[in-house]
Image 1 (spheres, helix red, strand yellow):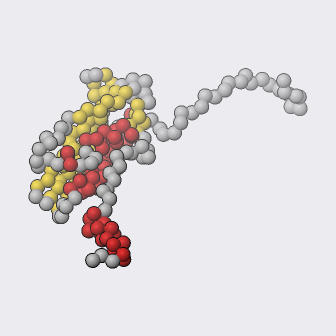
Image 2: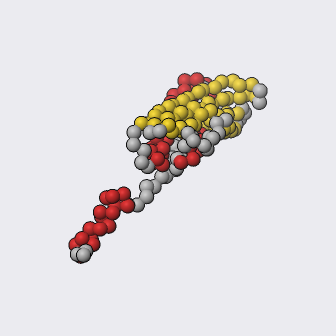
Image 3: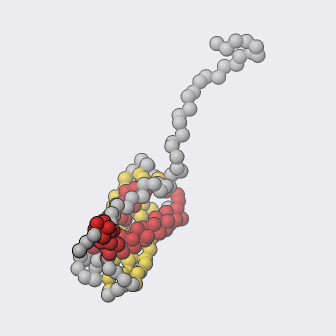
Amino acid sequence: MLTRRSSLLLPWLLAACGGGEERDFPPLHYNYLTPLRLNVATIQIEQRFVPSGAPPDVNQLDPMPPVQALRNMATDRLQALGAAGQGVFVILQASLIRTNNTITANFAVELDIYTSPQVRAGFANASVAGSYTGDIDDVSSKLYDMTKSLMDRMNVEFEYQVRHSLGGWLLPGGAPPAAVQQEPLTAVPLGAPRP
C-alpha cells in the first residue's frame, strides 16, 4: 500500500531512474564567432561527402549531423564582400563510424578561391578527428556531444588555416570607413570672421 509520502516521492524516483524529460539538442550555429570577410563576390557550398546511412555509419542517429554542422559553419562565418571572384567551401569528410563500443569521427573541409571558373587562386584545408570508447547507452547524446566538441575545434582550425593560407583574400574587420565630406579650403586672415 502506498502512503501519501511515498506517492509524492514516486515521480522523483522515476526521474532518477531515467524516466525524466528527454534531452534538447539545439542546432549548432557559429555566428557569434568572428566572421571571415572574403574579397570574393560569391560563396558556394559543395558537399563531396555523402554518408552511407548504413552501419557502421551512424550519421543518421546524430541530432546534429556533421554535414549540417559544417554547412552552418560556412554559412555563419564566411562573408563575400568583394566585387569579383568566388569562394567554394567544400565538405570533404563528415563521418561518424561506430564499431562495437567505439565511435570514430573525421571532419575535413577545404576553402577554394577562384578568380575565374577555371582558375583557382588559393585554398585552405582544415580537418579534425576524434574517437570515444566506452558505454554508449544514449547514442544520440554521445554523437551530438562529439559533433559539438569537434566543431568547436574545427572552427579554430579552419580560421587558422584560412588566415594562414588565404590571408591576402581576407578583408579587415569592422565597418567600412565613412566617406569624407569635401569642403574647399580658403585662406581666412587671422581674426576675421569665417564666411
